[in-house]
Every structure is written in structure tokens, then in C-alpha cells.
Amino acid sequence: MGHRIVDELGIANEVDTLSRWMAHRVAELIERAEQATSDTDRELVRRECADLIIRLWEHRAERSRARPLAAIRGFLEEFTRERTPYRRTLPEEGEHTWLSVLPYIAELAEREYRICRDAAISGVSIEEERVWLEDYNDDLSEDERRVTEIIIELYDGLQSEHYRLDGVHTPNFVALSPEERTKRAIEALNQINNERQGLLEALELSGGYADEEATSDNGDANSDATGT
Image (cartoon, rainbow, N blue to C red; front, side, top):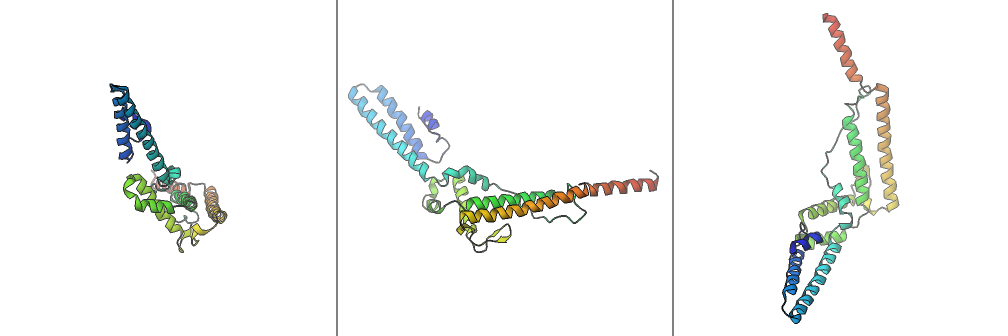
């Protein structure tokens, strides 16, 4: 029964030894109440069981409120996924092919991702989480600790006087009003969209296969010259 209670509470895989112990103790008391030989003993055990259940729920509720970034944890975990950085320059004029622009397309998407990530983190208040991480570090799972530490590090970077939003110097981005942060982020995203549009236009002009066609033409010419 103890395992069943643990499963129903959803704490089987959590770093919360106390809750699991209390759940098994509740199961033990339930069994003792069922096996009691007198009404007096049965009532005493039931009262102890009821008191422990209340304490278990209070502990779970308090832990839920205290868990750092619980309300947006799934969102923030997405931010912390390891991503491949791209540092590419636009191909030279006349060299725009589907293959040559792949790294640049990936870089545009990565820049958009970082802009949206920074705008989102800048709107999160993390001071309580900072204190929580310092005072209750041992109560966190490895995943909770990792997420919280990374978000705090990113947030601190957004407060820097040297912070750049997609290359544009934007000191202390966090201190800007939500409206101003949104405005700056949208401007940066629009700039990337303009770059993407220019790239698409260049691809359209080149046909997307300029290099491959040139290679093919040279191959045909060589074949004619050798008579093969």
C-alpha cells in the first residue's frame, strides 16, 4: 500500500525522501487500524494516521510552492537545451545555392531563438530562486539545480552593461520596461527577417543550383574534348 500511495502522489522519482517515508508510514498505520483488536486502539491509530496525512499534504504543498521556477519549468528547460552555435557569413554574390546557404539559414534561426529566449528570461523574477538555490541546494534534484543555475546565469548576463541583443549594444536589458524590451526584440527579429528575405531573393535569382550547374557544364565540356 505504501508504494501505491507514493505512486498516486507522483513522488516515486522525486528527491523527497521525507514525503515517501510519510507515505509508507500512513500505509502502516492504515494496516494497524484494520488489525486493531479494540475500538479504543483502532481510534488512536486512526487519529495518528489522519494527523500524519494532514502533515504529508502540508509538506507537499509547501514543497510545491517553494520549488524554484516550478510554474515555467518546462519552458525554461527548453531554453537550456544544448544548441549548436553557428557563425557563418553570407555567401558571395553569385554563389547562392541551396547547399551554400544552409549554415546561414541555421544561424538566422539560432539568432531568432536567442532573441526570444533573452526576452522571455528578462521578464522572470528570479531573486527568490537565487536565495532558494543558495539555502536549499541539497533539496533540489540535479535537473532542478541545473535549470535554475543556467537561468540565473543568463539573467545576470542580461543585466550587464555590455549585453548585446543580436549584436546591438543594449545595456541592462532587464531594466527596460516590458514594452521597451518587446520593441527592441521585435526590431531585432525584423532585421533577421529582412536578411532572410534578401537571401531568398538571391536564391531565386541564382536558381539555387548555380554551382552544381557550372560543375555539370564543365563536366560535359571535358567529355566533349576527350571524345568520351
